[in-house]
Image 1 (cartoon, rainbow, N blue to C red):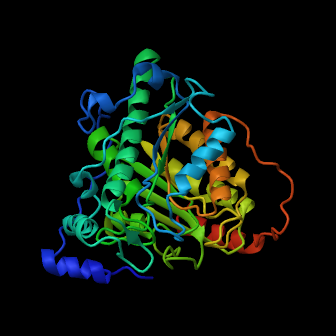
Image 2 (image 1 turned 90 degrees about the horizontal axis):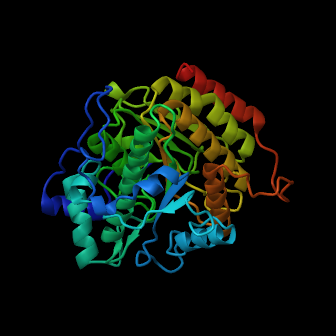
Length: 417
């Protein structure tokens, strides 16, 4: 799979000099969690009021990047509006669910320094130059930019960072009211462009900046979350996130994805490097895998790995392109699969880290499947039942049960789960 620099990146590297080293978190430990008073990443005006922090079950933010689009491209500005329409049709809005569902509107874009925690200085600066002087253009064969794309990517990362802060602030506010007895709300970022394919020094796979990676580093640097877990259920392997944290034992990266799909990475043998060996867990599911495979992978691999790691916060690269409707890959998740996965993530976060979990949108290119899937994730995080009809879906084939069983057995043995 391609891991090197694109022609655009090479051009920028030659012009600007060799790439700087991306920052790493300190060695894992259990330092003090930073409170609102000690965290300096966001201004007080960007934060939710205490009433919202105390009442919310789910906090969400929207960064639709309407000017980052290309006609005919699957990663278009129709995606977030389709989700918002599906949420409205299901009465999953702050107006219909007052107090329980809270929208975070006031958030700042990420700073250059925040994204340079996970990307090289030359890549960040070079993407800005290209967007401002040469866009519209392709920065890789599948990834475009417009003149607004750099700012849109910063804003998406900013939304993710603000949601990490909101979840941590809510946990603090609730702890001060009822010590030891309250759980944080979940959060969901409807952000684009997606991020999990972006490597430290290159765009890739529709992605410009590693949104979940930037959120993870912010959780560590600004909020004192020593151990961060990232669970990626996008149909495509999150090679960028994998590479950013490849040698970092303080971030557990667990990915379930379709074996053999783009970008060709995510083999089970990739378990990290150096000090990070064992902190990367890749579970390549055979084509045709669906609801049963997704839930078995979570129960047999994801959950026990999380319990052993004991994270301070759980971040989710939430891709909806494993939905059976999606045209870009070959898994067969149902809409209800996303309800069941999301409910399991929240239960896991409640058990291990005081409820702190943040979902961040990645893929999902069939607009109906995308809207349905995200709406069912919202239902799960609010404590509602799934909205899917549980009946049979015409055209869905039987899952490759025996192949899935062998994959999961191998993953469990390899990682001693």
